Length: 171
Image (tube, rainbow, N blue to C red; front, side):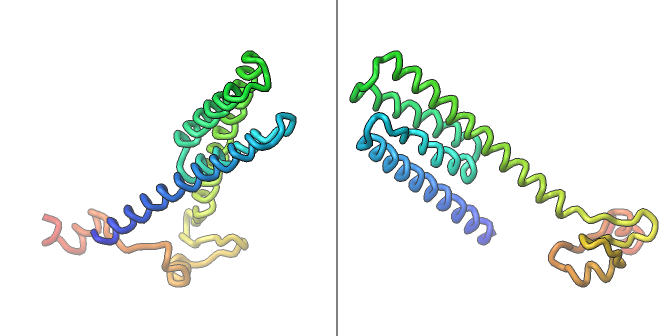
């Protein structure tokens, strides 16, 4: 129980650190955007915190970051107007679309990466002899494979075997 609590606390602290890092990175990028001339397209670098937020914190935080950064960028447009309000609003709309697209595509890549990891862990087993095929194409007996790779297996007992071998415990 204590291990689970420590893992949960570590995971929480990790997320808090990511939020702090992403907020600090965003502030730095906004400051750099503010001090660069208007012709320098610095706002495109704001995709970096959105990408990181989506990858490490999840889809909804990534979308939230996309909306927040686009809104802050809009406020900056009106703070020191270099363009007309219409141009500033159009720029913000473009930023918002690019930022949300960044979050969506990053989430899709992360999801596909997780699916590939699951598929890579699937072991092909012969239907008849129960031998296991490894990635190099060779076949190994189930018991020898498990002995050589104990990290991916655990022991257990199904209810039918429990009733058959330990009838006094199955009641």
